[in-house]
Length: 512
Image 1: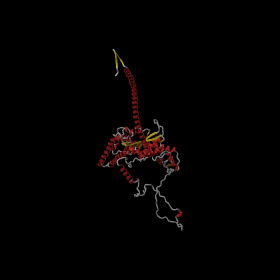
Image 2: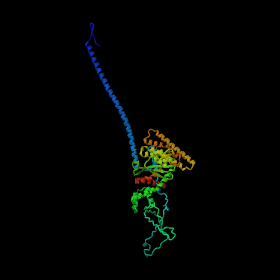
Image 3: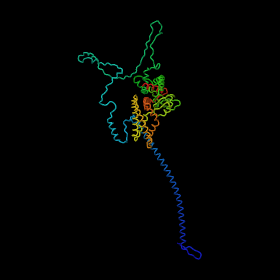
Image 4: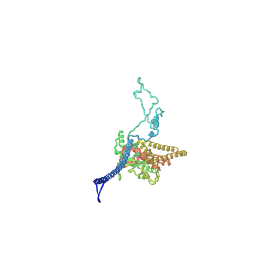
């Protein structure tokens, strides 16, 4: 305590009290200064904290963006890997889509499945006639014309080597048969015999001769049979003209490219009426298979850039028509069928077929749907069990429809098989929707299932119309022959050549 000394009416502080007051004031100033600096430091650190919080928010946003980019890049890498695997499969893998030897992987009981597969593969025989089985004998080939060739002993061997007495011919002969392939070119010299009347009736004016031989091209040097063989070589066996000329040169006939080309141009004009008749016949049908493939026409056309054209195939029940068009738009089937056409088209999922109007119904191809799952099986190793399961479901649907068609003439059996088919189709819908509801489903399976959901009405059109096939394989088969020609001679060199190509493809495939 500070001591205070009183002198009269005044009180004065002692030295100790004064020092204590000074010390207290110093401490007050000190702590006040410390507080001021602390407040300043607090403001500085608060600003730094705000900056750090802003940096943290920015870093979190960047991290989120990087995570999204990483996921996007991962998906792109997976898509590119899948694309590489798909291209490798196309280049080096097997071309068949048969999947009877596929075994699901990573399923319960894999070891048992593998053992069963090994046992099956060991017991499976190779294709064709099996060793040790009874043969059928050599076919007689009696439908081919026969030509007898007599073989005699040389003159020196027709007598006894000791006495030289000639040998007599023994009745009969030892016969052996072989099939001979003869290809030759000949010149037909047509000689028309002239006739002169020997009477005086004057009913016949002057000298008569036999009528000239009909020619496909007037005054042409090639016969009708020659042009038929040339058309077959070019438009059925798909051999380019320069190879045909090489074959002719081997047989002794040297002919220029222009000669053959000019003749084909004239023949194309003659074939147009028949081609138009087949097109008109195809329009009158009520069920068609349709497909298209590219076909190059190396000629400039007004309003078109480039040389790519499209070869459309239309397959009704009794003919086959090809249309060479510069476009792949919906205008092509609309122009061919007309506005009043009504029926069902078997086609792929190409979008132009959906715009043909309400009278035309599209039966979509189950083979293409199945091909989506086969592609997933070949490209995505982790998804092979899933893809194999779906392939087996689709195979079962094909098999059930085949069983239904076998008893089409038996109403009772047909009703049973038809009910089983409808149940199989309904089960596919249930499984599809259940899997699409799974959020963890990878993108490739989800895309395949969605592509099956959208055209489901067209995919199940065969259920109500048993005469409609499940697939569009017929039109794909009809395009194989033209595709061979496209690989061999690339397409058509002019517009008239393209029209001739479409006409001859139409005629030959209709005849076949």
